[in-house]
Length: 133
Image (cartoon, rainbow, N blue to C red; front, side, top):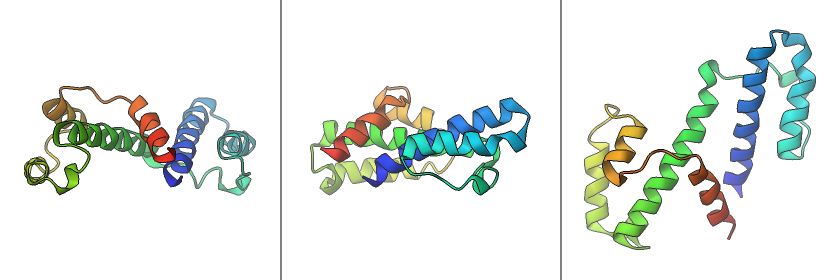
């Protein structure tokens, strides 16, 4: 359930930040902040947070992408090593090899190298559905 909450919140934050930066009238955005996040979360945020809840450089998008990467990698590991992939020595070796790369490859490069797939945001929705089942 936590994943659903955060995906809805961060998706709403991204929409809000895009609108905020396109609008140019920051003082008018407190109402939109409450509308957008309130609609997504079904709880009303404080309008006082309309500036404090903005991350530098659309950092919120990095969270959404990381969840997509995690979901796609998890699905690949499950397909390749079975549902108990986390107990597989081969899966552990693969993960050690990947993490040894450090931050050199991007998530896109790493995912394509391991799975042959491109990063897809739909994977986040699939992961949310899986966690709710």
